[in-house]
Figure 1: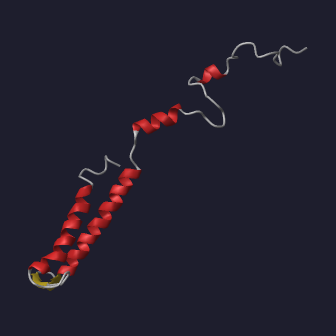
Figure 2 (figure 1 turned 60 degrees about the horizontal axis):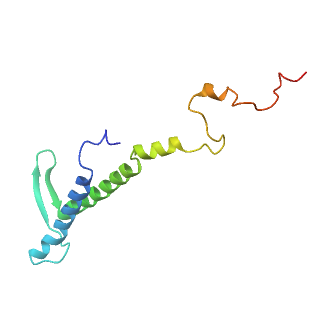
Length: 121
């Protein structure tokens, strides 16, 4: 997961939080109510006149917060912890007991285990 993401994971979350907070609280500085919206009309060559509202900026901020949290949670749950894998490798196998590291060692008898099938008449 860390190989595919080449930027700070908190950047999306932080940027979205700043955008949303600014859109929410700047109207207070201008003497309006919290989250009061404003609009501006832009001339875009392909679309002619486009009206952009501050609600669009707030929605973009919320979107970045949500995506940032999802990416951070995914990265946290998908983290490859080498110590965890070392503990899992050293644990006992609950079905087969302690398995030898060398598979050929399992075929060798461990001392005198009593008569075998080849010892019987």
